[in-house]
Image 1 (cartoon, rainbow, N blue to C red):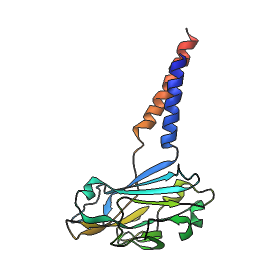
Image 2: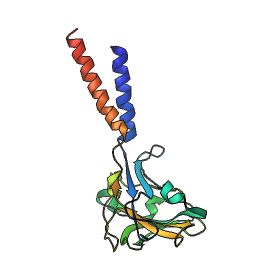
Image 3: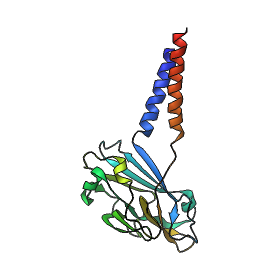
Image 4: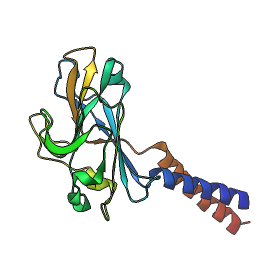
Length: 207
């Protein structure tokens, strides 16, 4: 009985650590529909609490195989935009730890409208994946950086990215989206662990 309880508690702890402070979103819209159809998952944006720098928020933007399978020799993300709310409204360029050579500002991402925060690189320092960190904002959470912006001809989404260096179509495109990735299977494991604890307790009561 003790072993079962310890196992269930371990499952609860592992699941809680994996899911408590992270959210992922697909970029599944394109401004070049003739080459990159809407409704396909092209990039994954993951926002999470930093483990190595407690109190900070981390962004990881990863091109998926549907896009990277057409990668040329200089493939990568060249721009990325997001918006803020709540405590995130205090964000300035000084609070963002960019990749080397990147700058922080604001502006349009073609077809997806204006974004409060736009991360910009150049053709010589495209990122695959793109990683940056937000620091020094008191009380912010991952959800302070996953909100709609002004929107554009392509619609209104949380995020947009400019990706270049593809070997098909025009060679570059803008992608946007705010489709939340379904809750991972670990959450169902969490539910199973709770059920396991309840069953074990019931068995003990009637033993």
